[in-house]
Length: 462
Image (tube, rainbow, N blue to C red; front, side, top):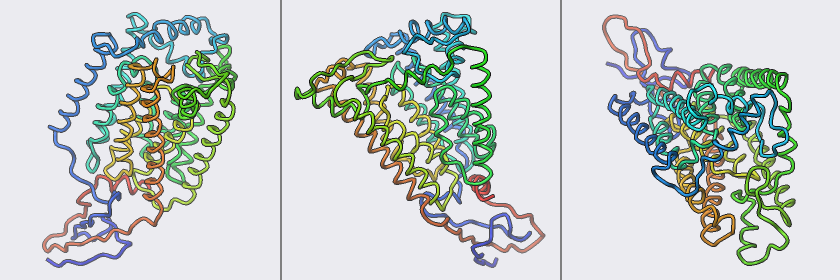
């Protein structure tokens, strides 16, 4: 047997009919070599983990395991009240707590199709979407060259948010975004349409398009997202009154007590330095209103613009696009959006858990440390709400310490995510060195020995 080293332009699928190409292992973060598909036992383990963890969620939402405040009133009182208004063919235009795009009406109306009480039906809807996201994550992670770390992130991260996760509709939106991202590379139009649908429900899934591979995949996915978003928005607006009233409510919001921008005010209150301000229920959340709020709001908006400006700069300068880059960029963009927002509600953490899970389905992702930081951030969020929310509202030392740790870790995760994304794409894509084994005997058909991620990489190379 003669061993020969191919040139940089040779590919695994282009060797002669009597050779087998073995691609040498790439550098860390590369995706040229795939590992075998996970064993059946690993699939059973992650599936059992989901069942056990979701049983824990059910125990928490039903009150068998009590975790702080009762968070079911958002569904049984607020969501159900919106449901009754939406059934009349109009949005709750006089309710300033309605802070959502028009597609949210579809989610609020959905439990009405099921036979149980509105509260139980809402929980069932959450479970169905949760399971759908899990199925797609397992399917993606079980492919050759992929990883089951993504499904495990979903298994562990969702229950860390406590009963809040099934008592807000964010898990439904996250599931749609997860599924959209997972199909984006192979079916860019379908993936774009799903993310567009998610954007119609809560805007942020559109951010996940930030890392689409340049060229026709960007064109097709962004066109699909725009088509889904505009057509559905038109249909809803044509059929119901007040579809875009929420935009006027968003403009008048203050600084939510759990946001990064609230930290200076918390410390000022802790030491008696914030005079003339109030902490009150405002536009559906507990917000700080008074001195400094206007300035902090402008700084937060400036931070968002700077962050998205950096994303545009990264996109223009990125030279190496791997199978994981689309997912990594989506997570980095969402972290920027979340960390610089005037409002960081507890349920926002499930957004980050979902996109981190998508990243971890690819072995070459640059976001592994970020995923760990997100898990810790999610746990700290539950300690703050619903377990000790009153301490946060009153700027008690324990509440300030908890929310400070959570927010600083969130900011750190954002910085680390962006830095690792930049480093993973800053240079030219490394040229794989292939070792060709020339086998004697009858003519054989050539095939790539490890085709798992090689196929996905070929999608990006088109």
